[in-house]
Every structure is written in C-alpha cells, then in structure tokens.
Image (tube, rainbow, N blue to C red; front, top):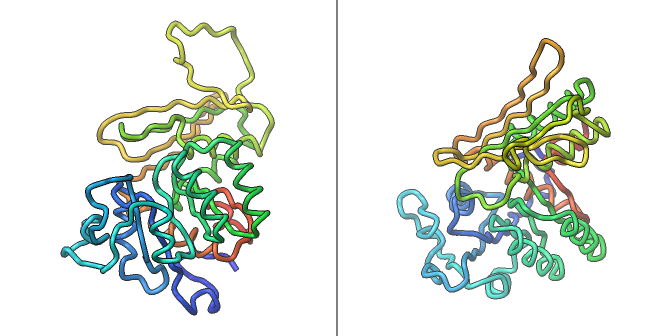
Amino acid sequence: MPVFGGLVTSSAASKPIKVAVAGISGRMGKAFVQAFFNDPVIKIVGAWGRENAEYVGHDIGQVAEVAGGARTGILVSSGFIECTAACSPDVILDVTQAEAAWRTATSAIGKGIRPVIGTSGLSQTHLKELASLAEKNSVGAMVVPNFSVGAVLMMEFARQAGRFIPNVEIVEMHHTQKIDAPSGTAMHTANKLADSRSHYNAKRVEEKELMQGARGAVHASGVRVHSLRLPGMISHQEVLFGSEGELLSIRHDSFNTKCFIEGERMAIQHVMTQNKLVVGLDQVLFSNA
C-alpha cells in the first residue's frame, strides 16, 4: 500500500516507529526534530552529530531549538555506537554528508537498523554496495536525493518531457554550504531523463569553451548540468527543454526545510515495509501508478 499524506496501513500504525537522527545540529536535523518531537507515529529516540561537539550530552530539544525551549529527555549521543546501544532505533535518518552517511548505513544494516539517507554525493559504487548489503541482510534502506514532493514531481515531469524533446539542460542552485556538485537531485533528474531516451543534445557545431566548464558537466546521456552556489538560496532546480520555436521550463523552488517534512515521513514509513534498497522518493509516490 503506498504511503501518502502520512497514511499507513493499520498494522504499520499500531506502534510508533523509533527513529534516531544523524546530523542533529544541521538545518535538516533540526527541522526534523522540530516537526516530529511529539509525533504519534514517528518517535524520535536518539540523535548524534559531529564527533566531540560541545552539544553532546545536551537535550535534543535544546540542540534542535524546538519552539518554546521544549525538553524531550533525550540526550545527544557521541556517535552511532553509543546512540544505537542506548535507544535501539528501527530507523536512522541520516542528514550528514556522503562519506559519514555511507559508514553509518553499512553499520546500521549490519545491525538490522533501516537507514534513510537524505544526503547527496553517494557514488554508484556506494549504491551498489548498499543494495548488496540490504539484500544480503534482508533489511530495508532508502537513499532519497530530495524529500520534497514537489521536487519529485518536477523530476517525473522532466522524465515525461524527455520522451518528446531531445534537447535539455539542468540548472541546479543551492546555498554556499553545499559541498557536492552537481546536487543529488540534479543527478537523479539526469538519470530519470536517461530512462526516456539514450541520448540528448546531438552535436550541431564544434563547441569551444573559452573558460573551462562554461558549458557545464555532461551526463552519460548527453544531458548538461550546471551548478550555482550563492548566498540566499536554499534548494532550486530548473530543467530546460528546447525545440524549434519554443522553450519548456520545469522548475522547483524550496524556500525552507518545511517542504521536506512530509517526504521524510513517507520515506520512514515506507522503509519499514522493505527488505532491499530503494532509491528516490518517486519509488514511494508512484509505486502503484
């Protein structure tokens, strides 16, 4: 049964899902705790952040700046081992960085804990190894390039447009603290476009870049991807299709972290029903489409 709008089967909803948060001090980690610290279905039972951080041992409500200074009675752990030993989570929501998320996910799967990774930058090698580990241990796992339902719809609309228009470029725009480029959303979009046709942007002239990288990175399918990093931005992407006499623009803008909350709920509920790796929130939204 698909999960949408917080709806789950009665069996899944019979008891709360215990979740530990990796990345408690970041924007995504704080927003998750603020949204779910008193939720009847998603029960936050633990968290950790940077090793040796000053907030280790503090209440997660204080660290996450929960409204009203609410205290949860749950203290920030020093790391994965301490946290999982103390709270025995069903799911780990990881909103750290790629390498840290990879290490956490492999350890979690080995312990029968389901990782939901909400960070980008994982390589295809990482994904293949995670898929193998999840299958070997019969443990559900998810990698979600973007928790926003609107962003997932943007990617799906782009995939459909790719069937009809063979000329396309992606422009993704993020805040200056984002390390990886292109973004996971842009990479996932390019992969979905490749599902619609094998090659885009047939060469018309012999191009000459006067500045290296001016024409962007090139996906194996020929889709070009451009990355912008500027203050004031959160998460934005535009997919531009061009054909004779017209331009189709499919754009999504995230203005704050609230747009990720429903997708996080959906992913956490969905991973509890899985025994394999699932990549992308689209696999939840369109599972019965």
